[in-house]
Image 1: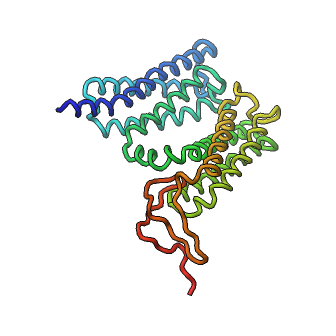
Image 2: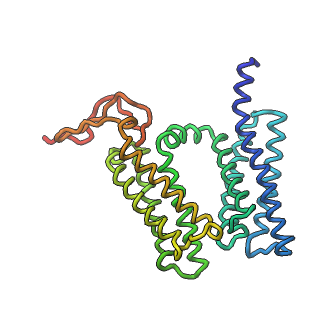
Image 3: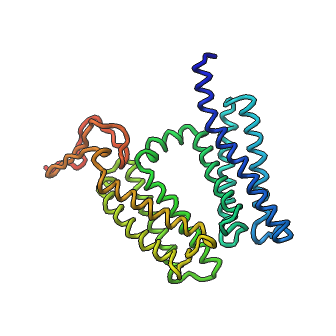
Length: 309
């Protein structure tokens, strides 16, 4: 094997090893936090809080991460299928653990070691999955990370926000006023982002036409949502007790500002040029890479709207 080939192999393995090592370290932190909850604070693992599930997830993640580190050390990146399946499994179990551990009735529903360890493992496992799934990595790099990151962040975080708000309503056995508004804001934001991402991915003209109004609407929506959610009467008034909802509201607001700025003030450097005539519209064929509003490839100018006879 040539020197260049060895260096390329090391470049591919190193980020994955780093991600797995982070999962390994944070799994230990999550296990320690759960053990402290079970055997020091509570005296036993309270099943109502889901501490037993948190302990099992931490132990399984620890075993998987140690095994992966050993295989990377001994064999390098020569087990692609196993690597992909392991990354998918870790992503799924930490996704479930995040929902269970940091929910209003979960064992780590406040800003403590277990909370940060759970979220850290989730992010690291998703990053490991991103590195292991080549097609997913290529798609995200081309379609999302470079040009549509802020819209994707709002889409995912809106899902977290309204799911957490709904769980909060369920635990209270009521959903009125600010609680209901928190759910509604998340749902509206989620579906608007979903439709815009669909337009972007399909390269539809609506992706350009709707970008500015959706950007402005998201800023107004999350300004109201942030103000209501984190107010003195809001459901997420303190990050110490409702951290998921508090940080999700803030992240959605910040990301909506970024998306609005990109869509209103910076569309020219990324988008295709359209030539709208009286009855006919054409796609300019000079640019075929993804733009801020998606990929539109049409090497032959063809009418989008048929000419009226």
